[in-house]
Length: 180
Image (cartoon, rainbow, N blue to C red; front, side):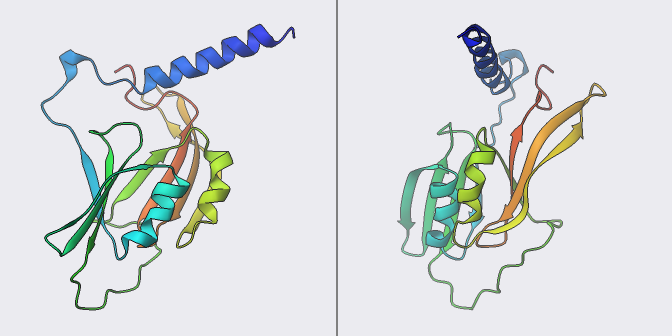
């Protein structure tokens, strides 16, 4: 029972740090541009959803067939406007698509980066998701910080059903750009 105040203080600090580090930039520093969405063109939306919706927990906010030729599914984490992920499938694809390549990302390839506060406990579900290939299990990486220090990150990575490289990290220090 002696440790309850200490544990409460640590929990409060952790929650406040998470809130502070995810706050928008100050109004005086805002620009008239927002990166609303990244859309991946996928072979089969239904093979992509088990990773993004089920394992990562993103919420489907839109799922429609457009003009009979394209299925678009939009998913969100914590914001309906910023950081939305789109999965787009061409339904009228006539030519066979090449098999996905599970290789290091190259010029022109996207890399999606997710921050998971529960990375270690969630990774087993991600690892066993159908059509997911693990590139790296969680391990600590220290990135150089602008002030000369380090930004400790628990890093992991997978390829999705289409060969898109997906980083799933847990930032353990102050993220780059916070307080700048």
